[in-house]
Image 1 (cartoon, one colour):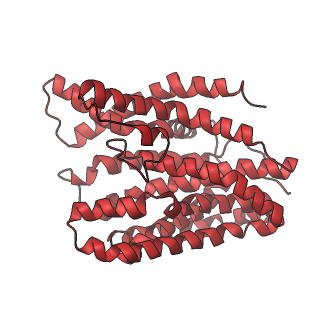
Image 2: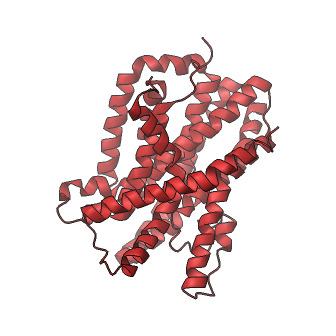
Image 3: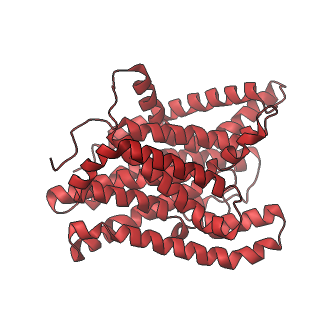
Length: 372
């Protein structure tokens, strides 16, 4: 057997995507600050920023798998189709959220100085302010990846045999990790002289957000995709070691959470992201090979929530704002608690479902007309 067993759906990857989307919301809600939540859980909740690295690994794997499979099958790949797919998948909802923030800031709050040009051009992780659309930095990283990956991968495949090109990606991961260590070494002493907020802001600006220091998460996914396509027999053999990969992935993830608890130490700033990406990569392998009964209700629900992962990610902060407005209008105090959290989750789900129904689905149907 030289190809993946034919299946219409890889539910294991959707389990990871659905979990990541929900935990990102949990993290930004600051659920660990609710009275009654055990302080023991603070390390776990405090490191849920790592869910964006899970998104990176998944995105790199899925994007590169499709690209490599087309090259393997045809000898080349269509840049036009690649960017049409990405445009209709990412841009419509993304620009709808930018429009929402423009209405909020300019028309409602009267902030005429508000300028979302950096968001529109996907340079917000280097230039300007993101405001409440702070999660958009990761979209900028992904867009830069989409620009760099297709051409660079073709150049690698032109100069190396397909099987040899697999080793390019770990080398690039090590290079980016080294760059991040150098930057962490430069920034660490400066951070010690600042208060917590200023130190946190500097860390985000110089280490957490820049594309050239965060591409390694995506490249871990690309590395797995290159094994899947160009070393398919090895990829299929990994199915025999699912238990071992689950165990190693779990151990690595627990260690990564503990290691990353002191987020602003030099070693943590340099290596936390890589450790998280390794953990998620180890778990991706067995989950990819896992077989599920797609007729079961649980499988259908996971597939449904995974489909909403992108709108959940983009719309949970706008939902926080809308809930504030609604409760204020009803003269209800917006107090953080389990009841409020449950209502917030439900509200985000409804908004995300409507966004998928009214924006994403029509755009995905429209893109078929532009595909070759």
